Length: 64
Image (cartoon, rainbow, N blue to C red; front, side, top):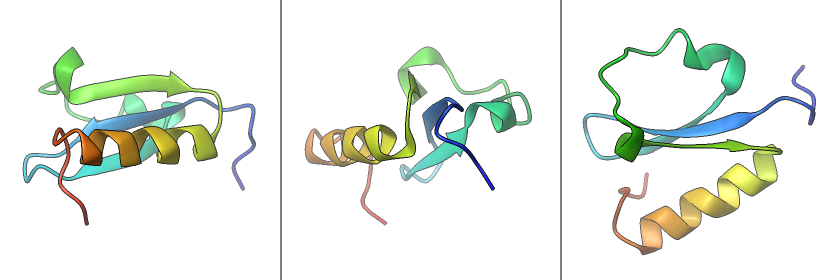
């Protein structure tokens, strides 16, 4: 189970969708993602979800 003390990131996938991942998994992601394709860290999952909604509204991410 994940705790709120972990950091969260939003990573844009090749298909344009954005995925929320814990910071511990960020090292496992490919290094192809540039800073413009990754946002964070966020202190909580709820904060990351809210930011992802904003990115979708801004047209930077595709809705699922």
